[in-house]
Image (cartoon, rainbow over all chains, first blue to last red; front, side):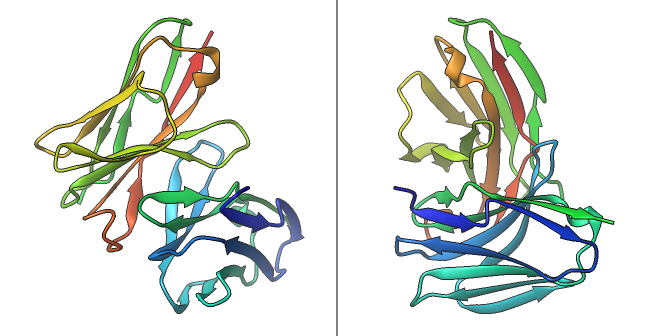
Length: 106
Length: 115
């Protein structure tokens, strides 16, 4: 049983579309992270959330602690947003979801 | 401010050999965690070092071991390599991990292939 589940696993979009990636978790956490991983493997931390909502540019992340659920939204998607987006929850260590592979076509 | 640097970036080893992977931590961070990411999977926690001591370990056998140095850089050692050890190994540094504070800075990873 995965403690962190993401949906969808794969997502394709046309440039300009609004995108939502969902993350559900089953453990009590101190924080939730949204990460971006490009084909070379390096991971970039996008957000760390413990409550509410955060926004950075075209990216918005929300979390509902009671429902153990978080969403990552991308507005006006662009081909350079193509990457794997990973949700990770912080229990004692980070527990990762399997990621959502996003491809945005021009 | 420096980020996290991992070396080498790519490595090919033969089954049964030993390997050492290295990771520098970001300036100001005192905790380093290591993760193994198999192809198509999310990263799995190997262990974490805080102030030169291991303070958390995932479900990995003892042939996976590590060190953290006084400058907070870290090594991951894997003995008796197996084919299934082929993966991307990621390290991340943070401040006071396990206490719920601070974000993580990830390295670009070392891709290990065992043949």
